[in-house]
Image (tube, rainbow, N blue to C red; front, top):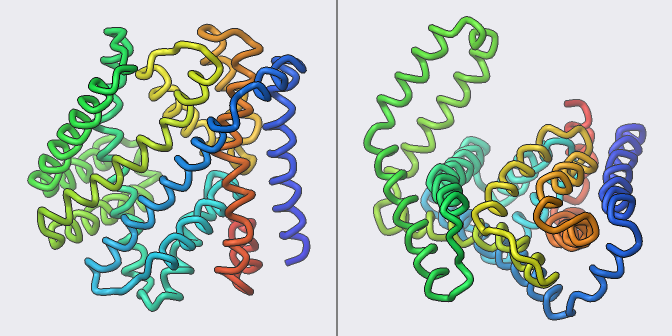
Length: 336
């Protein structure tokens, strides 16, 4: 156990070092000076947005737990979210996130099967959001549509909500056909046969998620997606806030798609939080718009909100919430 704990600490430390070293080496000391000129109000806004993400995630979890017949208080839900988000950025590929969710939900009296259903539905709603938001973001980028005016921001939120609800309705109405189509795809593509077990689990998880959603009723279903929408708009709003604070202009659609790419890079990078890989991807994608110095400054500020702060604020919550199980959890993730 001590060896696994040391390995985890070494990986996390290496990730932190790389996430700080890459922007400094890329943008030089000028990047640190540029980042330090950002008003304190901007940093406070970024922190508030992250707390908002956690609150909306907690609201999602509470809604799902109640739909499954359980009970979960606000403080407990927020603690579960913060601890799980910490575990997600502190373990390779975010492997600690679902494990922490399961552990802490079970401690609230929720059966493991119900906890797994909560996680599956939560992830399913995220997929619904991205399925509707990514095409809109790409269209905005291609058409060079700006959203700086408040009215345009409101219209964008309305369009994203309606698009997501449309995707959700289509999936719920046709989920049996989708499950059958996925099964046929596995049979027809030889290369996928090696992953039949994994694919089967994914299909079963999708089916179970849909069954839970169908039991919730229209009102709760819309509220669940609204919480999901609010969470991701806040999370993906951090980078536009940072870019504007540095007095730069980058199309919102591009920033949205770019963060989706970085999310993928973070999950396939070996180090916790995607240390190193995310920084290189960020620099490559944003430098054509902002130059090396401003890009490095934006990277430092963005990673503060979406990585460093998760570790700083989440670590004590994780340790208190998990207690003695923390060591076992980290050891289990290390074995994977």
